[in-house]
Image (cartoon, rainbow over all chains, first blue to last red; front, side, top):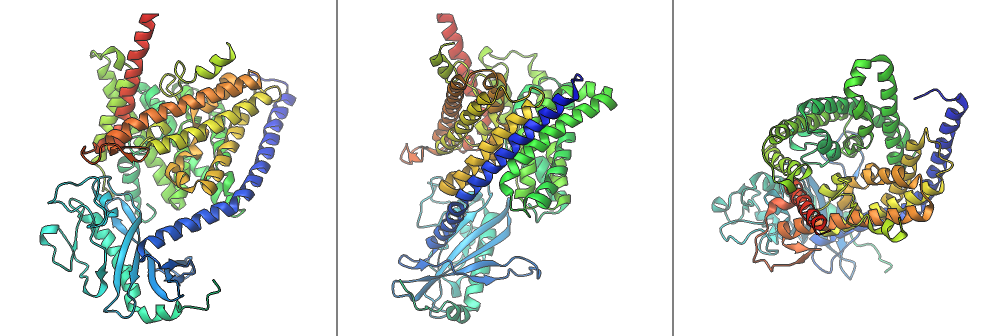
Length: 232
Length: 193
Length: 200
């Protein structure tokens, strides 16, 4: 750069700073207008995911139970992981749980699983699951987002292949949580998606954590989520 | 990614989530500079240098200034200003103190400001919630991945230039198709780390 | 140049992606579905339009020495506005475009137009230039996304086209498919352009 008179350099920088300041102020304003819509959009997103896994007519409330993940240190942020769902009479009809497993083929997998028939451990049913986040291979591991028997996958027309997980209407008490290739899978096992055993295992792992949380503390959860007087 | 060890992050950055073949960052310079092996080396070195400095600076700015003050929305502006300023500064300093280095790398520097890989990696460091050491490893790994892609690519292009390529395909088209084939090869690294 | 040609040059002759070879990163990354291409294209067009107008308005105030930082600050501001507005009012699109929203700031099309055009031309011309380039960018992205979505997923804008008969070629929605599709698209443009020139 040639040496110009020092003033014009200073002036040049000053102009940038002024423009930057005006822009920053403008942005602060836009931030303020969008803050609430953004928070609301996030709430809606979480709610939609949780709503998918509980039976129809069971409405999820976002007042979830705080559960500190196992092994988390004292300072770790608490996360709401378990959410109640109430029917039209205000009775507890379902529980949705967010859980995760880091052992997917390409990293972490986040799952939402929904439980109903909460009378006892024996009746406790895994209603269905919804994989909310994963980075698995498209066309292979990504099929873990399908549920067998329910949503025919767009990829699989070959009957000999398993193209989705069978986590639909399963009794928690009888689930063996063993993930095996379809030929070897018993009635109470989980049949792995064809060519995606690792992805399937990760999802099963996440769901197992969630199912244990619910079934082991079923009475405690029912008490914590007991229907309160609803004003609606 | 934050749960991975250092080696895992390095492998991910260079191979499985290669900046160019998996994340599509840094394509413009990739296509523009890779016609010869020598320029490829120069650009890779320049990118490594600037990317490392950029991540080293932008990370603390976000964690120590923007986040505590609740000014996350100023991330884009502040990061790109830092990068642009950095490149300008590097150019001035290099011109004065390392003339030979400047002769080799200098022309690439202005191109680097708009290299989306630099800004992209700086943002990914924070999105993936890496700590500072992990972020620096990821950054340098990404720069190495960029360099690797660039060097392989320009080697192939140099060889292609002496073969007959259909006229419509010459230049960018054949370059892109080559990149596509390389991307397929890199897909084989999935699951590593 | 007449006003109309300021607008239309960005659509074909000087299409930023297909002829000027700018803005390729987003072109490859977000074109797995036409929906995302439209979202990205319109967002980038908004930023391009706004920054062109502001830069043209301020062109006599912005000092030559620090013009690049000024352009960058202005562009980054509009990019952040798009980011915040999409997050709040079109959350799904925001999620699918992900990191490529802040990366609009280094989209060489926008910085390029600010430097080559808006800093030297009146506001209205700059507005038309921005609009044309932005639409051209969007069209290119939609073209690429159409190829990738139809061949790779059997759908267009999410609507199934083949009724499950045709097994999609997965490769096209994956990174290699992006490169290859764009390569063939560019080659196609070369062929068409050559024929046009031959025909006069």
